[in-house]
Image (cartoon, rainbow, N blue to C red):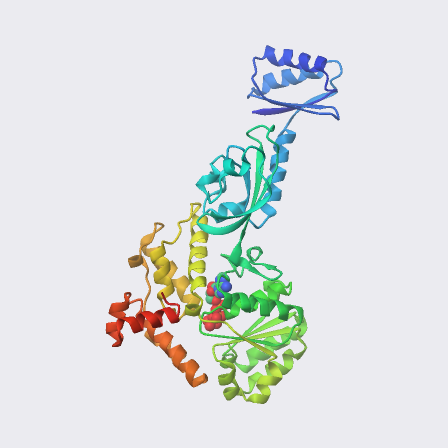
Amino acid sequence: MRCLEIVCPCSIEVISHIFEILAAYQLSIDGIESDPSGFIYIVISDLDFADLKELLTGIRCLDSVLDARVVGMIPSELGDRQIQLLLDQIIYPVLLVDRNGLILHANQASAFACQSLFEQLLGRPLTDFVKGFSISRWLGSGNGRTEFAEVYLGERPYRAFVEPLADELSLSHFPSVLMVFRLEGQYVPNLDLASIRDSFAPFGLIAQANEYSRVIEQLQQIAQQPRPLLLYGEVGSGKRFSAKLLNHLQGNSLESMPELAGPIDDTALDEQLLEIAINRPEMVLVYQLENFSSEQLPRIMAQLNSVKQVTFTSQYSPERLIEQIGNELFYSGIGQCIEIAPLRNRPDDIVALAQAWLDEYYLSLGRSSLALSKSVQQFLKKCQWPGNIAQLLQVLRDTMARTGPRAWIVRDIQYEHRRQKSEPMVSGLLDKDYHQAMNDFERLLLSYHYPQYPSTRSLAKKLGLSHTAVAKKLKEHKLT
Ligand SMILES: Nc1ncnc2c1ncn2[C@@H]1O[C@H](COP(=O)(O)OP(=O)(O)OP(=O)(O)O)[C@@H](O)[C@H]1O
């Protein structure tokens, strides 16, 4: 296919002369466009170079033709490319659909949401990807009206903004409907989570559970008014990730956030502190506070006094840290504490994280992703995840390595019960008051055994309780 650009006034006379020349070469015309500023564009079937040269010379010889040349594309194609570039800048899924319900334009975000490749969306019926919305019903006898619709896109619930684009006289293959999809659960005030896809969040930021949305809200406040922060929680629960998120919310790059990690010898620590004093970063992460010696901590806190945002992480609770480093040092160095809840208390995050990891994995293979089955989702929610997100990701990697890319059943999941890892969780109960500790222990015990005894009857037998008592407790702890 070749595109010719002819510089001339767009008159019937000149066009008929051009057509005569094209007819002499027996060319078929695949498209023609004109521009009132004096350009005619013609798309013709392929022509060898010698003939093309002759053809151009013939056209150039016509009176009123100022020039003729081959160009890369015609203006409407350029328009399509511009639309695509714009659509791809939008982080929400967006689809443009014609009156027959065929997808004419889609952006990368919609391909991602549909767990499909971008090219596979174009020309396909909307109903293949969007459930709960009918174009013909929406159009009715007219053009449809602006409305919000609760729909499923790629098997997840979205709120779709639907806007008519053209009237009923428009051609049936023109975009008639604009659909913009937004995830309900993805919003915390003033922050669009879908926009956070950084090197620290390779498969996106997951905050499906309220527990983590609340953490984000607190991080947003700290981003506005920096103060020394302690992020504490179990191993692999997302403390470092949250620190990186805060750094991101403050508008800093990941590379510009130095990290002090203990245990470290004094010389190496001094060197790192000196480097921080020279580079004056906006944020410093002190990773695993409990691993620094009691002589090193006062030095670190004093040296980092002038850094705008210092963030500490620890697997210990504030109470336990106070016991270890003393009241005075703790309160002089730390202005706010945020607990990152363990994954077993954020069951919605478990499924969302697993699905997001899976989507990313399939995308890297250039294949459509597969949705986790309901039974696999239930199983993942029931596991206790002593190693939290880090363990979940490892289990997904191990399972994938064993099964390869295919739909999983519960038996495929390579979840191991790690007894030794539950030690810190049990000792963490010692920091709590009696009722909280008993409640947490009950949950721990149930969630520990439930994956192995997945029916309430078998679990009741294991724990020496009645079937109804176990069913009630599982419900109370939201484990079913
Ligand atoms: N909300 C989230 N959304 C997406 N990925 C997350 C989220 N939170 C954590 N992760 C991922 O989970 C993994 C473990 O998180 P992270 O390293 O922050 O845990 P941690 O609590 O700092 O671990 P440790 O106790 O070992 O210091 C990382 O791969 C991180 O990118």
